[in-house]
Image 1: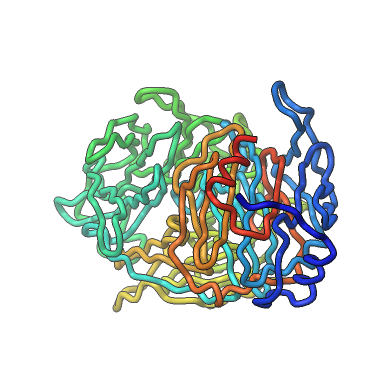
Image 2: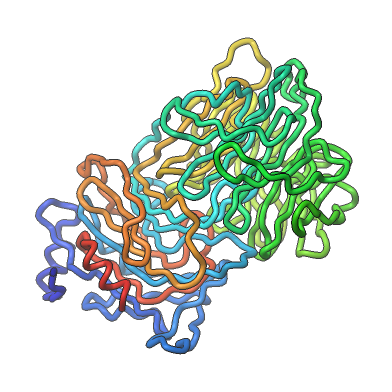
Length: 552
């Protein structure tokens, strides 16, 4: 068992004098924030935090300490002196107790981060509920741990599921990645496929006879699919020979079994699905506008829409359900009873997708090809155009950086500050077509997966190195540990290893930067939950050591 005796002056001087070098050392315990009523470091280095709105609950029955409460708005703790801790290429670990509620009205957000988005160097520990990524809710309670050192993303062609024209929807559930397709040929139908490795897609069946599975989401621990008769001519392609209407929602029961959960009235295509305050909602892609709440069995309750306008892609952030609009280029906000119109976004006529970047709600648009964010005054502010593209669709914050997919060239861009977007790669290179789309995205196996039209191919993107726990993290108190050891990252929940990254060359990852450590904040969203007993270790903890911490 490793002993944690730290001689402050000797060890601190050694690793501070030559940050990142092979000779420098990190203390076994860099810092220990008990979060028992304050943000002070009880370790020998005195890395005390500056509190920005975090409150502390009394100790609950049977517990020895209180906890720090983060509401997911702007509450955080900043540790300025942590910038003197240069991780370099060293091993390190993070361990903490984390609590989340079962019923949510917000993303879960960044737990811990020391990262410079300009140099793209540092690390993050994040818990994400991605919702409103075009038509899907691709990630639910997904734990992520990532590092980067200014590397450039790499892409891999993972092949085409079935006879897909498009990967219309995407979602991660119980350790697996699922893609819903549009297969528009005569006698074809939209299927759901499970990823089993590059160019390996296992057919999970067709929920209905419609040409598309347009939306995927997880509700109460089960995967649900929404179907559509997608009007392929809207992507400047020959119209589908499959005329069967969609608008039905189905629950996945394994293998190729799908249980009907209702047909939405006057709905030929599901637009979006999401979970808000514990209730399941769905919308209509085409007119007439439709917005529905699931009750039970096959029963759905029709709800009002804002001024009769379509509410298509559905996201959840800062206490509200948010919806994009295809009728007037607006964004709408729903509180569970009524809608509020947030106004038109720029000069656009359609809004397509949501993401949360640096604590701000961002929306994708047509035809400006720009991303906008909602500022503190409630106005939409320009975040820049992606090249010369006309439409932004799937967007994702992954491993510290913000990415977007486009039309008409089917490209992926990275946001590099202010209004700058850097082209990374064109994914769909189909010849002799007017429109190519990078439609939607999900995070899985430490990477981001992108879907395309009209090639129907799926691509993975690796940016830095990341590990994800691809099962929904249960609500309540959980002990979390993240470990970087040599060329691998590992995640632990309640003392047991739940995920590990592929191996990498540790000499290519110097994590040193001049940024403060942030608790409850990062480049995604502010954390929504409670934290206590946060320890930053300058060593790679062993599994027995983590198991011991998880019992304390």
